[in-house]
Image (cartoon, rainbow, N blue to C red; front, side, top):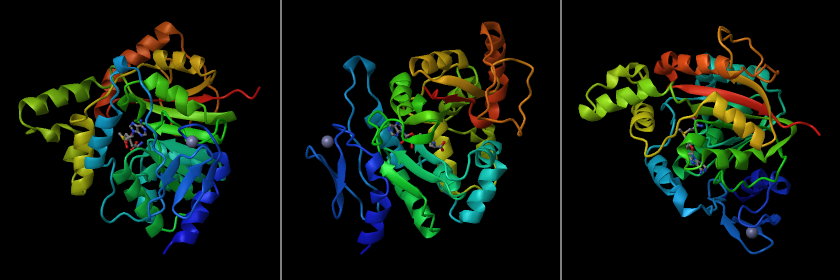
Length: 341
Ligand SMILES: C[S@@+](CC[C@H](N)C(=O)[O-])C[C@H]1O[C@@H](n2cnc3c(N)ncnc32)[C@H](O)[C@@H]1O
Ligand SMILES: [Zn+2]
């Protein structure tokens, strides 16, 4: 029976949390979290608290939360290779430029929430360097894989929790960094989702989001069309799918996520600058930079201010995204800060 460590793990975060239904204080029972108003959230035997709350959406927005949950419960993303260990997780993450940059540049001791953590690679990885990380997602099958990895490798500074990102389980201004990579574009209301998770950034803290780009995604869209027309015969057209040595589960996770996803939207840097304004956040950095002719460098400082390009500069960069879309699915990244006053 794991009652004591399980209680311990959740208890540590409780004062920073609130009820996702009514925002009342939370208290811990043997196998559940309860709020002062009577809402009750079970904690799974493996230690994952089930704090998912349905959000009220206008019927016109055509909510996709249920469809997305069903999809990812079937194919958790990005999944693990069967032989993954802390060593191989670190090696793989650091081989990817982006994760390495984050690991090098986020201070140890930082308090982080990853909203839409999927199977939790990034959350597990970032917790290794003494950071306190919450991996939050609505998909239980994914959270369970993350939690299993955490437990097997005694990563005690990461905690996985089930949450709907439209109904945060943490109080405003709790985190030094909120990360949401590849998630908001799988909701019916990406701006609403962004405004919702942005509440959790403390003054002086940061938010980092990764989104599909309107033009960066065109190559993937073309491949999807070819796959659909040929009953998925030409999967080798995707560089990730023709790599050798990928475990079957991981291969399938990428294939399904990229080519069979029930819902994705596409965005531009210009559009997200408008989102920052609505959330009263300050633009800090983007990948790619929002002005042209600035080659990407692994040593660039993600959390140091960079100027935001003007309309025509951005247009040049956004159009250029078409040529960058082939490898990583046409992503761009925006980092913003909540001003201190
Ligand atoms: C493409 S996966 C990204 C996983 C991970 N961030 C990564 O980059 O590998 C998208 C994730 O978003 C989660 N998600 C989508 N809508 C959500 C919502 N409303 N609340 C919580 N999680 C959500 C899905 O469950 C899924 O795990
Ligand atoms: Zn409540």
